Image: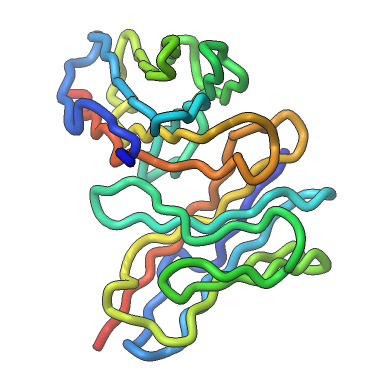
Length: 115
Length: 116
């Protein structure tokens, strides 16, 4: 069964610092990959997605992620953190076989941004 | 364009009761998926409906069921509620035509269910 591992349940950065949230997936065939953000008492908002093509994917709010097949990774980065980036971030995969719109989520990483 | 609407936002039920949650997808979207979010288990897939048919199902007991209507609105039902069913239930809609870029899912704000 496919799974998603997010390294670090909590990440803390200073405002203006680099944000790096790690995500690894387990699959012999690269699935579709997504990053979602969740603010308190809210649903999930899509930040970016990788399906096919360019391995560096740009998303909203200055975030980007790079798909590395050799490392089975899809890490999320942002060059300069803003206070408004504080939220929980989820990496997800959508299986290629029989999965249709099923998403398998990682455990999430809570990002704190301090002044 | 209106987003995904879930009602109610908050719900308190007693053990043993049943509950029905509602989800109205984005206009034109035919796929509706349901997820359970808890602090211990995280986000888990419950099931997906497309054109009134359940197309995919997660590993949940039969107490969890759903349906989809001809207008793509979906309901989720949980019978014989247990304390462990307390969670945020999220609904997601997508075009759902086939695998590909249409798999982008838009989430509602969720229904917070508390079982006492």
